[in-house]
Image (cartoon, rainbow, N blue to C red; front, side, top):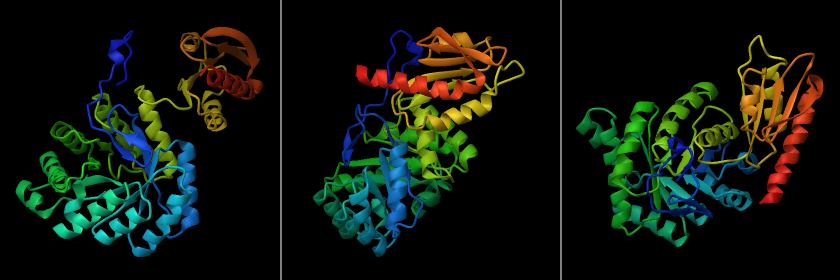
Length: 369
């Protein structure tokens, strides 16, 4: 639950879900909403995959998913798990043996659809492997791969079909007394995803993994994900998220965190508040913000920075940020610290100076904790 009693219009009441563990990361209940991504390297290329996992973890990923399409990938997974700083989810489609091998290799979670991996005996073998190796399961329903009988029943992918598919898969796990699972009901259509997630949220207390699947490139996919995931999170639905982009996995992590930060659900790193710039700007706002985003990537401490081009909104925004800079005239602007005007700084030295002030403030906040 995100609560701000002074401003109740900012309160988000999270849906009550039971908690499971994905490795050492709690998912559901009152745990922080976990951010996930997925590698796009060949899993058999262990060095490249581990490097991508580490980069994602450095960017803030709590969990990383790795595709396991064949036996060689399952063998490589053991080394990837050993080198990974975060829990690894094994993405399994259809072949039950890959699920067993992934659990044996140390995967923290299996992404499967129990009904798609064979007969009842094969399902039981995968569940046994997951239980024996302390491995949770994510049921991954996708509008693009619904079961034939549901498409025949409903005529097309729809929220009702996706919820029914999810509940059928849940029933298989529960019939085998396995309850360490979460569920997703993804679609590339924002409306379909949102409706399906609302339906599944009402039908089960399982933790929910949010995603708009195949959302698109960096810009278009970010917008679709922000709309779809943002609205669901605002409603209190969602225990872990992945932003699916045709982009570097690190970008998925960044976007995921920005969505959570905008709703006050997670706090990590510097939240930059900046204006779009106009003819009133006293310095090049766009280039400055681009430089600061890059220069401040190493800061993990939650804090705020305002970069405003002129005095129309600059002082007001600075009142609510840890560090601020407002453009003025004659090639300089005003630096604000803890909401108060502190000192002037020339534009040509401003970026280095702001980085120093942010690093100093981050150290103070860390020490206070």
